Image 1 (cartoon, rainbow, N blue to C red):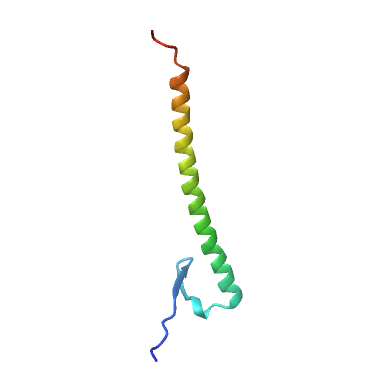
Image 2: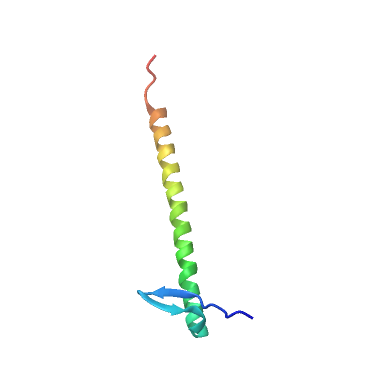
Length: 69
């Protein structure tokens, strides 16, 4: 069988091997990774919401303009 490669991870500019971490360290690392993913997803959703709000504000401003008959 081939040699199993260990997964390198970098924390504060120091490289570690994931498999060499304790169980607690792995859990904490996984929480950090999951939170990074959730923050990125939340930022993506916030960007969509902000653009959507801007579109509705622009439509409202247009609707509030007096008719020019």
